[in-house]
Image (cartoon, rainbow, N blue to C red; front, top):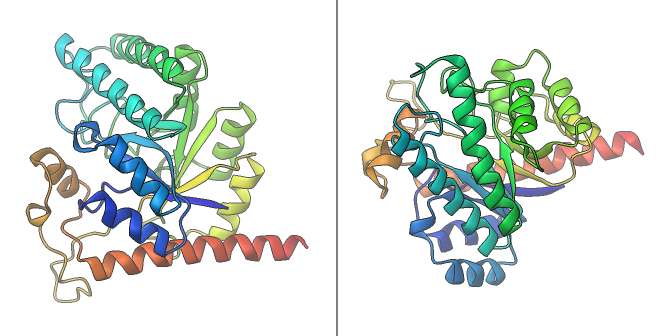
Length: 304
């Protein structure tokens, strides 16, 4: 089992992130899609220092980034942004970029079904051409209905990838699948059998670290294997703010306390999280890896 992790959930220097991942036995990172904030040369040196791989990147579709926006110039800017993420991933030796077609949190359409679909296909086709030039694959990620109305399930993402063409594929996320798919094992298998399962994100049903919710991770890992997927599982938990008297996480501050851009601060708040103290984050990062690797070991032992 190869484990990677996102880093958008806790804004901090990239060296801090990579040192933590190495400390807790991760193999790589799916780096946040903010190309302007990284010096690729420096990041490559840090990856080598900590013996980690850049698995890829993910588009952070904050306000102003939307491939199906009614404004032509917003769409153009969003295409260029996705291309920049692809270039960043390529420079860091990454293999994939997880692409979300529309702004996260946008829940109302701006045009007809047919028009928005055409904008998505045309825009991602441009990104796909660039992806092929820089040697990186695009993986379209469905999100749950409360974060987008556009692509929510594996079959929708597969259809979009098919119409884009080339080697465009799909990323599936256990948190989103837990909400939208009637059977996430079947969703994984169908996507894998189509040869389009390029990335898998992991968080529990409550978007907490694996093992802190109701998902049976031994069964989940088995489903991933059954789908023919052998690349990285990318951890993407989001720790919620709890301001009630029963809170065990009162030290988690408001998102405005995070050292981040206004767009990312809103992104964090919209995801129900905030400024997570390092001691919490370290524990969650460690526990995620431990639980996933133990689940895999139990599965292998049962097969022996």
